[in-house]
Length: 110
Image 1 (cartoon, rainbow, N blue to C red):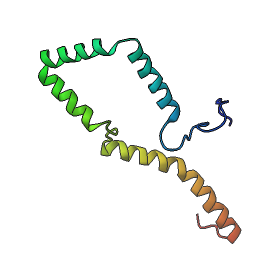
Image 2 (tube, rainbow, N blue to C red):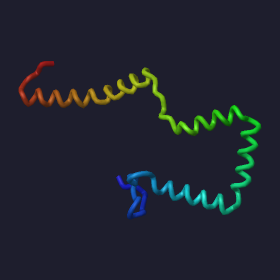
Image 3 (cartoon, rainbow, N blue to C red):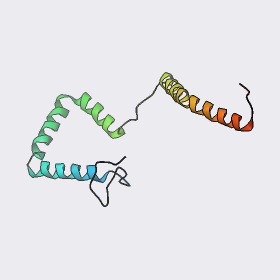
Image 4 (spheres, one colour):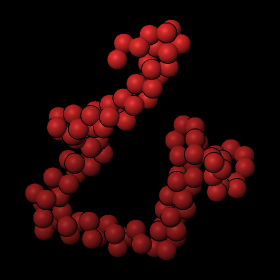
């Protein structure tokens, strides 16, 4: 199946190597536009007002931001359910292979 990405050269395709270069370019462009439009001072004032008016909430948000993104937590029940679906999908394939091997060996142990 072909992808719809017609861009060729470095960064083409889903595997862009170390990091996502396309997203980095987009982010950098947006940052340059934000600075060029003079929005930094206003954003800094809004942030200062927020920290002064909601210090506990701001501290909690800063602590969460410093930790970075978290992987999704999965319960044991969800892992077991996913395991069962994989086994349920693979079982018919394994049974067909076993049947073929048995038939080639001349065994009918079922």
